[in-house]
Length: 115
Length: 115
Image (tube, rainbow over all chains, first blue to last red):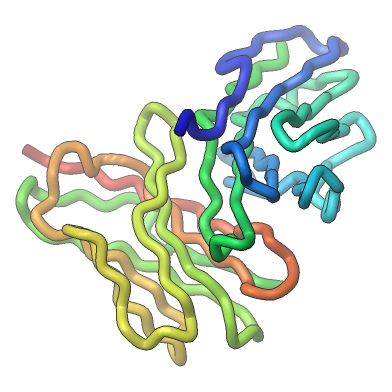
C-alpha cells in the first residue's frame, strides 16, 4: 500500500498568490482529514470528509481557505489569496470506518512558506 | 471541549534506558480512543500505539506500552530499551468514538536519545 500521498512536499509562494495542496488517500478509506501544524497552535483539524462529503469545516480559519473532494481518491486544499501567516505544514490523513475507523494514517505533509 | 496536555516539552534518555512520556486529557465522554503518534525529523506522523477507553488492559506494541488511568484521565507512554531511532516529537491524541472524528492533539514532547 502506497499510503497517503501529498503533493507538493514543499511550496514557496508570495503573498497574494493562490496555493493548491493535493492529497490522495489510502484506497478504500472513507474518511479524509486536513490538518495544519504550526509552532504556535500545534496540530489542528481544518476539515474532514466522509464519502467525499464535507462533514466538519469549523476549523477552516477563513474564507480564503477552501477544500474539495471530487472523488474518493483525490482532495484539494486551496488558499486564495495566501498570506504569510498561512505558513505551516499541512497534513492529509485518511481512515476506514468499517475497520474500526479509529486510526488515521497521515501523509508526509506539505510545508508551505508564504513570503 | 476536549483538551490534551503534555506537560513535558522535552525529555532525554540514555540509549537502552527506559523513558516515560506524560499525557493528560479532559473530556466528559465515556467512550473514546487515545493515541500516541511519533513525528521524526522527516515530519511523517507515525502511529505508535492506540488504546480504547473501554478496555482496562493497557496496550503494548513491542518496546512501547501505555499506562492508561481512566479515572485520572492519564495516558502515559513508556519506551523500553530506547534506541537512537526513537528520537522524535511524540504527540498524544484523543478522539471520541461516536460523533466527531477529529483528533485532538497535545502540544508534543521532544524526545532526545543520548548515545
